[in-house]
Structure formats: C-alpha cells, structure tokens
Length: 187
Image (cartoon, rainbow, N blue to C red):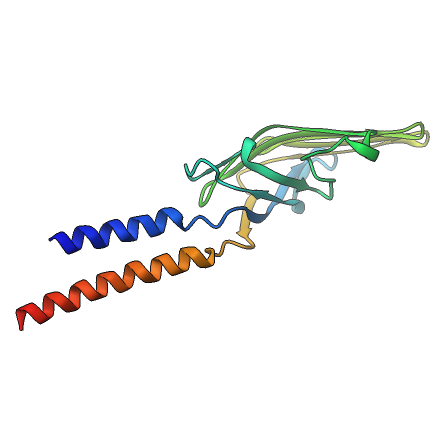
C-alpha cells in the first residue's frame, strides 16, 4: 500500500509539473446570419489565434494570461496603439477559454486617418460588426451567431516540456519497480 501511495504521489507531481508554458491556439467560427444580405451564409468566417499561459493552473485561460490575440487579420490586440501604431486603438473587454469548452471574447478596435475610418467589434455568441467609411461611401458588415455557427480550435504547440516528460518517465519507472518488487516477494 505504501508503494501505491508513493507511486500515486509521483504521478501527481509529474502531472502538476507537466504545464508546457504558453500555448498557441488557432480558432475559427464558420457560418453566420449576414445582416447585409439578410440571409444565412455558411461560408462566413471569423478566424484568429491567441497565445496564453495558464499561470494560476486553474485550467482556464483568462484575459490576464493572454500574451497575444488576433482575429480577422487584425494587428495584435496585446500592445496595440503604442509606438508607430498610435492611429490604431483596440481593447479586449472579456476573454476566457477552457480546453474542450467554448472560447469567449469581446473586442473592439478602430483605425483612422484623414482619409478613412474603420471600426469593428466582436462579441462571441452574439455579433460581429465592421464599418469602413471614406469619401467614397460606407462599407458595413454584420454577422450574427446562430445555432448553425460552428466553432473549431486547435492547439499548435501543446507539447509537454522535456522536464515534464522526464518526470513522467521517472514516475512510471518507479511504479514499475514497485510492481516488480511486489511480484518478487510473492514468488
């Protein structure tokens, strides 16, 4: 019984250390009701990527744990509007993702100069709005989430660190040694 407890503790320690640090995800939502055409568009797409690190180990990637966030060809929402990007402003009001669950975020961005103005906002599960204005007119796009909207996400680098793999191997070897020793005593 003692060896089982030691083995279980070793495996639990290995699992706790197995955090690989920052993980990059790519995501997409496909199929929306298009407000401009007034019909469902199965090819309408909102896609992007983010890099996050579950710093507190709670299994939830939160807004404070984001290192990068992009969608629909935008610049990175983290650090926008600084340096030579003073004309571009953005914000992430809400963000959360738990592996196997839904991705939730709410973003806004705007970009302007003397010739044009672009604004956009996204609230997952609700609506994406895009407005472009210049001297020649206005271009507007509005997509609404429906029951037919499909979500896909993939982790690009969710690989355990070498130290984590080594610790898991040590834990497995310890459990194997304990089992071998138990068999030797029985024989």
